[in-house]
Image (tube, rainbow, N blue to C red; front, side, top):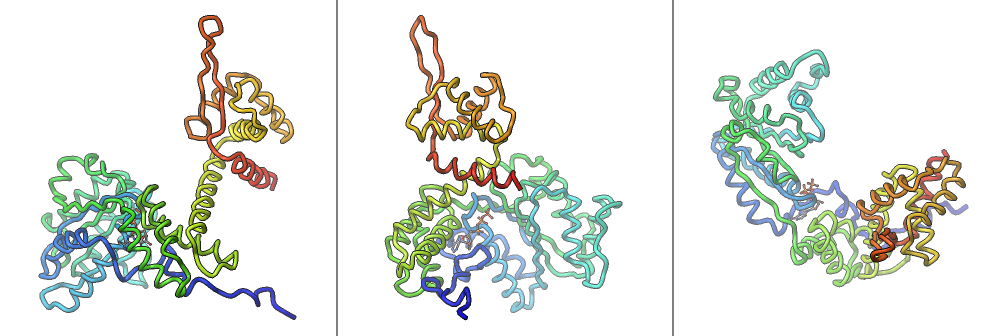
Length: 399
Ligand SMILES: Nc1ncnc2c1ncn2[C@@H]1O[C@H](COP(=O)(O)OP(=O)(O)OP(=O)(O)O)[C@@H](O)[C@H]1O
């Protein structure tokens, strides 16, 4: 008997991993200046001296992580080849909603020998954790670069950024050297630090701008060549993904995602080549997905109000007045078995929230001296997206 998967063959992707998030590119393109600055900041490591601290700034997907991985791999390689250099250890930690205690604890755990028990989660102070960190660094010796991703999410980052760079000067470290590399999407992070910290940190700042369409095209061609079969994509498709991502975020991640999703759509349709139309549809799918997530974040009644406006829009009756939205809303809430809100004011509040979130457009209608004014509303997206999202959410709620 034929197996369910027998007919599944890959047609367009030669190596799809190259378009996945986990892929680490061995060529970094369009970041020569940033790499040069990075190299300068860390070159002292090659001579067994203290590394500078480095702060990288830039929006999501602009290559901060990829460049860091590349530069540190190269540095590690170079330290192995140079006699003057100490052994280099790299420790990475994501600070997302972290405390200094848990960040230091994570570093300690990375340093502890495998057979040793992990540092306790509770019962000890940040000072205890820091002391253990210094003890472990001394035990291991060498140069240590601590990469703190999303450092702006670290509560009381001041504390850590004051202590670590001074560890040698304060006599906590002798055999080991330490440098901090902070990564942040938030350009104002530095302003949040106290002047005392800024003074000790004396970091090299490297800022990553967003990519323009030409830069994204270069990055995408390189990926497409490795990831897709020969003749599996058109210049138009690569150009489209680059242009859309450049217009929207300037992120290489977004551009790569668009190419991968475009490839999936083309493959679903048995197309032999990814065309620009597949990229357009990939973008549409992503947009819908994002809107669906945004709708899912709304409260139950806000969703019903939104669905009411979507129905009215679908019937061609928008812009619509608040009182008419209320009637449709109440019918929807009844149908779903949810007690409807009964005051016009509560519907008005939801409509105004939904407008601020970008779901709706609101118009003010002025009736002149006698009539006063009122608001009308219309949907700022396709009604189908709302129906799809609400349907899915209703199903989830029913489980
Ligand atoms: N210059 C580049 N050359 C090749 N690939 C790149 C380049 N810049 C980014 N990329 C790729 O784009 C994706 C996103 O890049 P990366 O993770 O480095 O961004 P980031 O700035 O660290 O983003 P975030 O702040 O969201 O972590 C990765 O797949 C990365 O390999």
